[in-house]
Length: 218
Image (cartoon, rainbow, N blue to C red):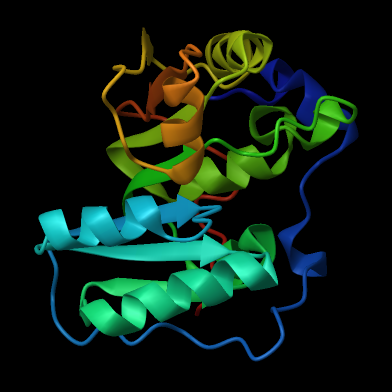
């Protein structure tokens, strides 16, 4: 499946421009000291509940977990320092700028975006409404997945529609199990008997973006 420019309707007017993004303050690449079978990215890792559990359960995978908020990152870093997980890199930065400068094309096996800010008053900032999402897909390997979770059904409805109609991605949508415990938000929502949804988007063979050859790391 191939993306054609004319089908990226909301990108036409607001094309993503990675060249205009400066590197985050004190930017440096994570120290990945050995070869791992898989590389995974988590955007908005919060206090690290999912990242810490994932890294512990998947020792052959290296996880890069990004969190922008200072107090959440500090809590995450404190917990991580006690666990000494060599396959986990903590990044305190804006995820968009860091991804542009720190992630090579066709290098990520899976991207987690779990319970992001729904941006209900500014839908242009929802992840699948942003031109940046095309760049994010260029970092994903063929067959790789973007995993999005939310407790807001309208957010999920829009994300699913964008994934299919704009980004032309195969998708799988389902309700999160009531006993799932990936993030603090997920625990809270499910404890209140709220429904949570997950959307898995898959990058198919032959998929192209305008950023496939764009590499700030070279």
